Image (cartoon, rainbow over all chains, first blue to last red; front, side, top):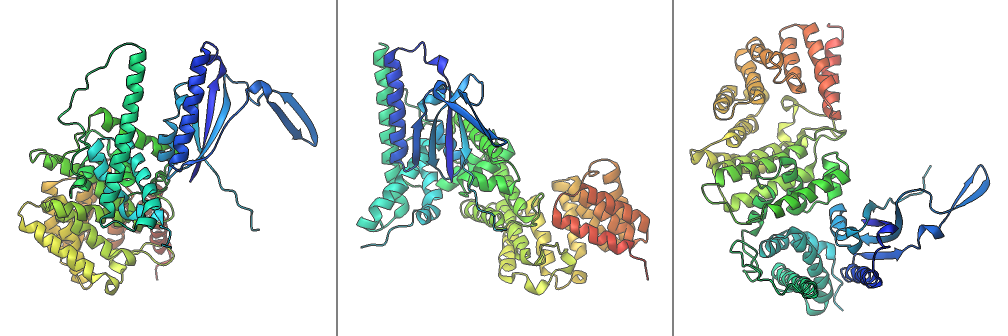
Length: 120
Length: 418
């Protein structure tokens, strides 16, 4: 089974950090990726640029509209995604619990849905 | 070139046994699970080149132990580093005589048993015991267990997280219980095994009557338990499950409809399993310390021994239910005893026992009590009473095959009598 870790962070929490603390966090996250890679769990791990650089688009009723920023106005934003292969949901939870960022933000663990073309 | 190894096969063959030993060595479920994964990866890389080790399970335990020690060393180094930076100086680590002993023997034959007692620890609520046992000892995934119990996987996952957390906080001793504690501790292990079996034998709700994977796992666990602890009730429970299992294939039609005991094809019952189960019952009774499982097993053995429903020894069965009402009285036992009474003394005597159970409220919400009531009323010629009771039973029942069975009974009664 594949599971996506959706990492939600409140950017405000980073503001009071020193550069050394921030660098430490990045190193810890890269080490975390390495551990997942070595144990054969990692499929993909990417960080996302801040929501200020996001564009949300809709093409409803045929007309395209775009707005600045993320889809939802929340304090915590989607800041990164990690895709893993795990035996079951509890193994995925166990892996996610080791993520350094779990001490700062929220990690949503979502099983991937396998879509199939309808046969009708 | 040697054939590549099937890691899933290695997992199926050895993981449960190896995990049990790793948990004893490190007293940490999560760490043990993680290094088991590492050890399996190492096996998949090494075995195709070096050949399969003589004792694959022991190889996996020592590979897992090596990885775990490595992880613990690294964690300690990180912690010490942090401490030095905070200038607290090194802290002494108290050796705990009941704590983990990573240098202990790699594998003890009774490791799975220790794990069984740990998963069924009395400090966990029963639903957590069952979930943890199925995932840790039976190797089912969270998603499979959730499906079996018709729960959302996220709910089941939290049950397992909480159970592990609780065991960690309680400071798991991971030892076999002291003889003085054994009856109570064994009681909770037997209850979990029986819950797993029952869920497989008669699924709570949903479209299928039986789940053979769960019944097979329950029998496997109980066999393991009986090898180490051949106590009366362990033998009794194993016998009971085997005797039920012997009739499993004749309990439902090809389309998943329920077939009651009286209508089952007795020639298709598994005679070898019945012989084994009956032998276990005899051994349990020979100890002179029978309890509810042995008594239920003895009743099942009498049903299995009868060549036809009318040749069943109902007097003996009634006697066993009467003993059971003394040893472990419950409204459900009383209901089953009433059905035996109907075979010995007739439906009127049985109805006198069943009605108070329903009216007193103890079994008012139990569909089988209403169904039994309906059956007695039908035999006594009270058709309107029987129809009303079947309708109540139907309203209380949530399992599709049983609902279809009750509907068939109801429509038989509603047909114009010829």
